[in-house]
Length: 584
Image (cartoon, rainbow, N blue to C red; front, side, top):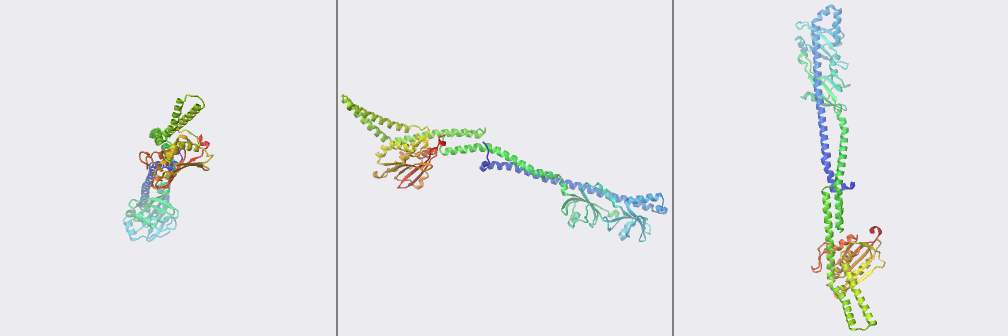
């Protein structure tokens, strides 16, 4: 059985599909989202750790270079007198060449004036009392000045003789390229910023970036982990910083080394995941839909077959069988249904036959009376024939009369035999007028006995119908007997039953109307229920109208009732006209 989309309209189909959604899509989506969040968190944490380690490594490298420059400055200060006395020569050239690698310029600061040794220091040196005390203690001093270039001027100073009162100081302008050689080891796709405590930018690898926003700066100074995130224009960065404490050795505010990486670069490995995530969802949805269709096909197919079969049983088609080959409980249920349907068919046949016998029992008196009349005539004629030994036309006439009486008996017995036999449900082309006439002939004596006037109004050339002759006999006789019972309380001269046949463009109609006691409105909907009856137990079992409705279902016919208490009842049956498709 092919599954159609309309199967999802059923509650079971929707329940199975929703169950698959809950058991498949939701967990897959949840696992995927948790994995996405977990991987994203891991990437960010890993980036934070790497940036933290690299920023510490760069801070240490910067500090080591400053310490190395301090050693060089001390070496030059201790040998300055020797090199300056010579002024020229190979050793002096070697001395200045060494300076040129790490310092842009070198000068002697004495009596408030700068005397150039190598290169040119353009701006005068102004030291605070605290800086002088630091120098005179024998320590090196870092001194910064605002520069018009991209990098500020950073000077390293050291006293030639701390114990002397002359305060001669050797001043070197540090070469930034030498300091920034340490930055070459920074990880790719990262940005380096070096600033001091006052947010003065000493170096930045980001073009046109001069200072951090105040909120970011506040976070940097207050963060204990050294990790933070910040935004520059439309770019979002993950950053880590490390501090270089210069105050003890160089009397300079601490440097803060900030290493940043674009968040988009950090999460770049997730880009493919973002592309595959919808594919995973779509694939899962397709798989769930396929599995749902397979399960619904296997489950809903037998359910639909059984549902249609039960509807046929409800319409009176007892004996209807189903074929279910699912290999599970549905197949067993189908076999049980077939067994139930067979038993219902057998039970219905017994009930129909019992109803016929009940109707025949009510007509027994009339049957016996009809049989007695020809039997009495036969008996009398035989008696005369035995007395009269002569031969001639009179004897022959009596024999013919006896033959007619016997033929009448045979006809009566054939009618009742046909009526009482079990129906084989042989469908054939029938004349409704002929069927009504046959039933009337059977019931005629009983009608006359009860002084009931039965009017038959039949349409000439009535279109044929397709049905079971014995089943229709049962329908007409049941309705006629019910009409006779409804007239029992009527006066003898006012008992009337009208049997009428007529047709329309699509249907052939039979109506049986009486002027009896009628049926109350509240009971009219129950008259077709099994075992419901308004008669005494001796006159009915409550099965007649239920059987009538069951027989009419098999014929595709519909029955309706119009009744008013004290006025009468009219049952109308609409049979579909015969056509060749139904016969096939």
